[in-house]
Figure (cartoon, helix red, strand yellow):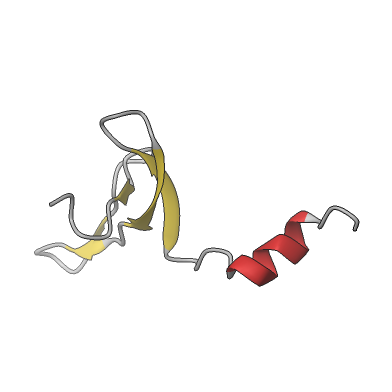
Length: 62
């Protein structure tokens, strides 16, 4: 058998959705998380998450 390419492996495993990302938890383990989306502010603008801190656990870190 030949080794599968990255794209072929992603098709089998499902890959990650655009709203998902990888983050490092408190123990230093890399895990799949959810990307924080911009939220509206009081005056019709948007508040964007800090780059590098825009990925959290999907359960909200509970």
